[in-house]
Length: 635
Image (cartoon, rainbow, N blue to C red; front, side, top):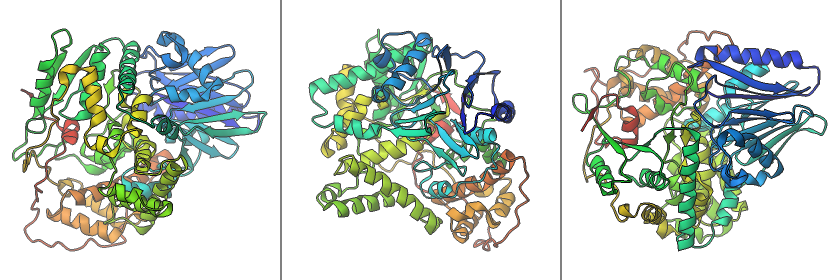
């Protein structure tokens, strides 16, 4: 629920405007605080720094600290801070870390994302904001008439500035094609994401706002050259992971819950935390046949002194196996609107399958994520990447851009403008990789770290989600791997064996050939408010800029008829997510959106037999089921 607000006005006669802006922000979020909140902050003549946080925070790291000459606000938990300021307790480390980042911005290369550190000189008025090296920690910027505002919530920036908000056309185009807001785009026009490794400074008497950036991903890629599996480098990476665990233990007393699946990333994360002697509970959801068996074997191999509590759940299928996160009678449109109120458009549209919260996310526990492990696995590598690497520079970049576009951008039902905008962002990121000296398929690893890891997913929604595999040494080692080592999971295997030797050479989970576990039936076409959805999708709106509306309507007809598949559901999820965001924007502006009026007709039904659900022989993603299951039973 942390909400940062930093501002700078062009003129020094803006004290009343600042107070009014803070009041609007507080009033907007008042219905959304899950627990009593408190605002901390200081103001100078033209600048100010404030943070809303729980009145009684569970964390030892303070979100606000101040001294006579410096105030600092911290978002998230800057794990590994000891590498920068020494062995200080979290309660004492916020100001030293802020001072060190101010004096030495390159210290960002030693810290693990996500974090945002903001500082204010209450005497001189200088304001500084630092993002983590990748930019996983959210910081958004808005230039408005007469000043600037920065926040981790786009709506907070708009309310402070008293700006009439509108959907961002480029952002929603990239969302349509890729499923997330690419580059520095956001759901709201004029609000932009501050990139990773950035320092935003506002000096009232020395040029105003300035932004400098250290390309941390490029720096880590350069540092990672050489044999990543050399014994001393494996030990250095393992020690960095153990150090992360030790830093984590200091942040919140008590037990840390970690998911242990049959996969490589969760196993490596669990091994690192066990090696750091973190007090753990391991949790396994046996959504796929045989996966829980592997997790149970791993735990059984641990010596008694290391063996933590292990909780295994197995979802019960409803009837013929469908598993959903919300009841069948949940209305789609109100659920999507609740998601937008809580996450301001930034959530993936697949969240439509889960019940939306009615308040901001409270973070009173640690969630250890296995995200970013694909940096060491060549996530976007095409089969012919070595042949592409041998092409001349210009052709090589074109080929990688084409392969990446084909891999990650949706085409059916997406407008040509959305594809062009998304491909431009994609290509610009590959150009940045080339400028950093990456000439082969590691350009795609750069894209994975700088774009997908930064902008996709839900890690930055809550303060207590931490990502061990973003320790700098792991990222560096990932860039040092050969393609063959990536295919063999060599970095994961070596680190797991080094951290927990009992787990060496234990196989990862593989679904049985031909297994179909808990198939997911398309269900949007059966929603109780499907007529309302039809009115929305047949009406004009800003959302149609990113979509081919006739194709969307034909797809919706298939879902209504029960002949659609999961790809059809994906398109409707994204289109409806974008369309309902316009209702949220109207709420944000204090207006009411008119009832949608159809501009196009829905195609006629192709079946006379009503709804006939089609089940694709598709194994449901265990990751989705772990999030989505609402009925679980112990083994």
